[in-house]
Amino acid sequence: MKNKITVTTLGAAALAIIIGTGPVSAAVAVAGAYTIDPDHTSVQFSVSHLGTSKLVGRFNSVAGDILLNPQGKSNIEVRIETNSVDTNHKKRDSHLRSPDFFNAKQFPLMKFVSSNVKYNQNNEPVSIAGKLTLHGKTKDITLSVKPVGAGKDPWGGYRAGYDATTTIKRSAFGMNFMQGGVGDEINITLNIEAIKK
Image (cartoon, rainbow, N blue to C red; front, side, top):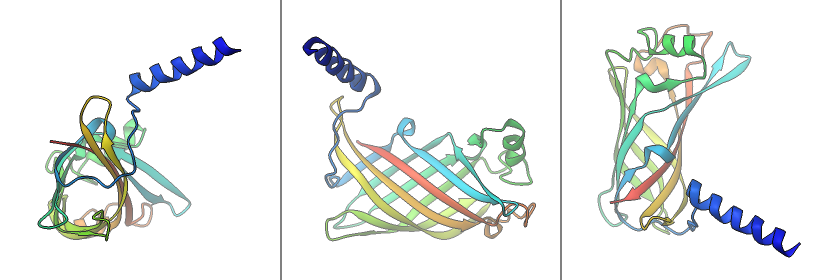
C-alpha cells in the first residue's frame, strides 16, 4: 500500500511538470508589462440560434500586450485573427469567414485597445473600457474583469490570469446577415494568461 501511494504521488508530480501546472497563487499581479500567452489564452463567444439554442465558438489565434499600472496609465491591447474562428463545423466556419459575417479576407484582424482601466482597492483591474475594431467599424465597449491569480511559474517566469466578459451587438459592426435566425447579441469571454516581460 505504501509503495502504491508513493508511485501514485510521483506520477501526479511528473504529470504536473509535463503539463505545466505549477503552483500559482491567487495573489495580486505585480505592476508591469506583460505579453499574452496564446497557448493558455482563449477567446470564446456565444450567440442564440433560431431562438432555441446557443451556439458556442472560439478564435484560435490571439495575441496582445498588457501594461498594468494601478497608480498611472494602464494599457491593454488584444489582437484576434478573424480567420481563426472555430465552431467545430467546417462548413459553418467557412461561412463565418465569408462576407456574410466576419469577411476575414477584407478584415483579417479584430482588435481591442483600452482607454481606461479601473482597479479595486486591492489594485486589481475590474473594468476595462476601450475600443473594439471589428468588420471595419470601431465601437466603445467595456469589459468586466475578474482576476484569477498571479505568481511564479515552473520555468522561472511570472504569470497573471484574468477572465473578462462583455456583450456586443453584431449589427453595431455592420454584421446583419440572417438577423432573426442568428441572434444579434454576442456574449464574449476572454480567459487570459499573460507572462511578465
